[in-house]
Amino acid sequence: MKKWFAWRVAAPLGAALVTACGGATDTSSLVAPPQTSAQLGAFNARTVRVSGTEYAYQVFVPAAYTASRSWPVIVALHGSGEKGSDNQKQLGVGLGPVVRAAAATFPAIVVFPQMPALEGGPPFDPVLLAELDATMHEFAGDPARVYATGLSLGGIVEYSVVSANPSRFAAFVPIAADICVVCVTGSASSPKDAVYTSVLTPMRNVPTWIFHGSADPNVPVDDARLIYQILTQLHAPVKYTEYAGAGHEIWDQVYGSLDFLTWLLAQHK
View 1 (cartoon, rainbow, N blue to C red):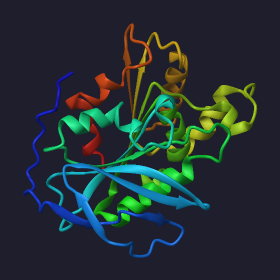
View 2 (view 1 turned 120 degrees about the vertical axis):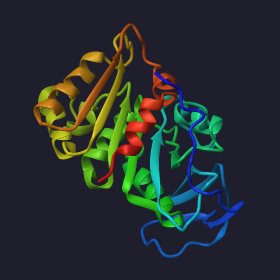
View 3 (view 1 turned 90 degrees about the vertical axis):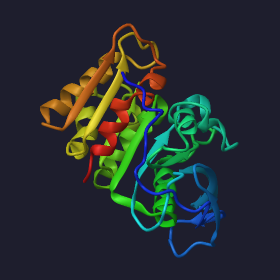
């Protein structure tokens, strides 16, 4: 697939700084946040407070950003290896390195959450949505152009987020991911077809492009094929790309392609 690192943005280059929220934001009541500076064409550290706990995340703001027009917003969720609290590891895989390499011309705001390392904690879905809300509030995010993408564990979590909030997203791109049956029903023995259908039905109107490796040793390719089959039966706007012979780590190939970004940003609610 063609590379897009030379992507060009027609909008005029904005000022070097834009007013933004740099402190913790309690999104339970999104009032005007404290104003500090944010760097354009760069990653900006942010925090939100959800149910009394503070979570750190990063927001990439395009070099051409100006609040005089609205911008597409991508939420990119990492895999299990990037969990933690340093607010840096999630930038080192997936979409992060691609955005960094094209920082001067990347045409969208990108939210990079970081899931905590602690297992068995509260669901991450409310945190992801709080970080998205805070970003939309701080910057000129376009509600009609909000996109979700996640790799491995991030894709698994985002199936849950998109299913529960289908009206929030203009498109969804899961990579090397499936649906967590035990998370939905509490039992790994629940019929997979029925569980998948229950998760996918609410999101049947969200354009979805599934990517998977045929030799993935971590997430069975049959799960991705089943998801595609069910979405097709639901007459959903779905695409499926399977890399023959590829394993689990296919995200560099996906995120580095012109096809991915062109398709994603073409989707509107």
